[in-house]
Image (cartoon, rainbow, N blue to C red; front, side, top):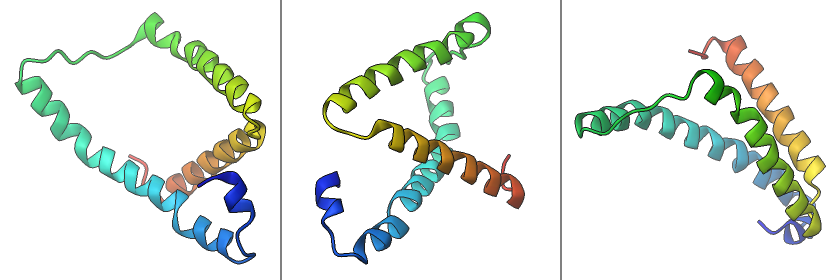
Length: 109
């Protein structure tokens, strides 16, 4: 939703939207990916496709590459007027909270 439109919603609606959209959507997407990964990987392998795992030095390069992508995104979004620091902080906090919830419930595998 457009941030400006969201900011102009009646007082009670943002909380309702928040409660019924972002985390529920993320849960659904995660569950869908979890349920689809193994069958899709099997189909790909049975079809003769190579399955490549990135490990060692190649894998170690990913955090730096991700940091460059993140910096580029922050620069572009900041220029567009987006409060990136707030969004990143919120996303990181939600991820940490959700991980703690999953670990506490024993649902992490």
